[in-house]
Length: 510
Image 1 (cartoon, rainbow, N blue to C red):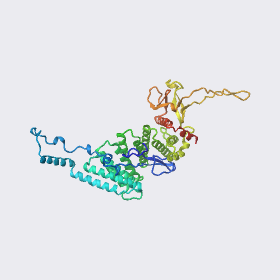
Image 2 (image 1 turned 120 degrees about the vertical axis):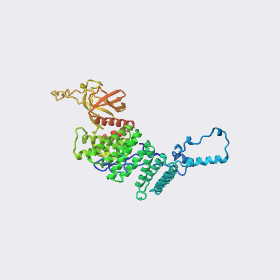
Image 3 (image 1 turned 90 degrees about the horizontal axis):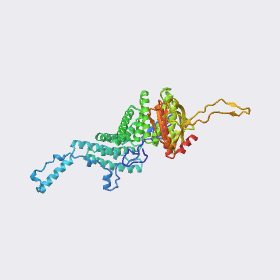
Image 4 (image 1 turned 180 degrees about the vertical axis):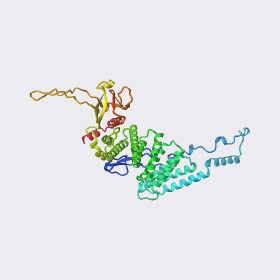
């Protein structure tokens, strides 16, 4: 999700910004509204970027029409073309009197001007009045806010007019929801009338109406989920908040189903799940947290330099490690708390390397720095073939140690010590065999990294690294372990491609 503000939609540019919270837990959101230290549990806030949804009131009339476009033109008239009376054969060339033409024109106007029932139009008018009253009563916290609110009020009037003509104009409903949502962000902190929650609630109603009319409007589901999340944050750790977070996750899920190529929606989905996990029972929590981890990971694999999702994945792993320590529970099939802490540190270090001037990431890195396997970013075990032999018999593959840093993925070959003898002068003779060659994959040589289901590999989670010199196949102990290696390799290569290798190297030296 790019960080630039979009002028027409809340969707692009509205990403949650995380900031770690004090003490024992690193934060789990890409930028919260407060900026505590990196130490405690993650607390995220979805901060909406300011968006101008309407046209500038000072623009020409033509510009206004194009910038606040509704679907009026696209809405079919209730008068069916086939329902119009057909000319009799002898009327094809008949000359009509002025009275007849005027009568027909008046009849057409009446038909086109009332495609909806009076009851429907009146109901829409009442809804418009309530929403307009809310938007018009927002004053803005400062001069800039007041100026922006005038633009929003102008836009709201246009959308209200469009809906009075056509209550089923889902574009107008969607854009008006954006106006209400933006107005909520423009409410003064000390304002009680209207409240931010009132505006967000009204925005949610508009999103609901828009998506009923157009169930494939993925941007509406996305921004609706943001509005619901903002309402949930106002309610703390209550049952009402739990219900709102559940609704937000469903809307993010719907947005992703309609637009799978949206790392922003996946990231926010993960954040909503993480917030929900802090409210539900302990029995439900672990499952929800694991789902949140998968959403952050999916977001990163869609956009490898998406530093917010990278950081969020680090903080949710940190929180999981903290829970593991506090409960004292250990499952042999799952990662230990130390492994979780180490994984957490990798993602936070990568986020810092991509955004070194971002204070939230710098603070979090200080907390987890000692959890890295210094002087490397990652280390662990992989099953590997003998050097130079890609597909030897399974019996020749050996589980050996590897480490990853900013330069390469390197196999560690432990030298077998031979019997040591000493000369009379005390000098060591033949200290050991140092001729063994190790597998090394230089980061700049990597073309792609992926899981491999090659049936010729030994049992385990296959890893294929495609390089300029050919393919390298390795096998991780488990699929969970493989995810860690895949992410680490992707991140190190992305940092190299973005020219931030020196920043990553500096983390090891600090």
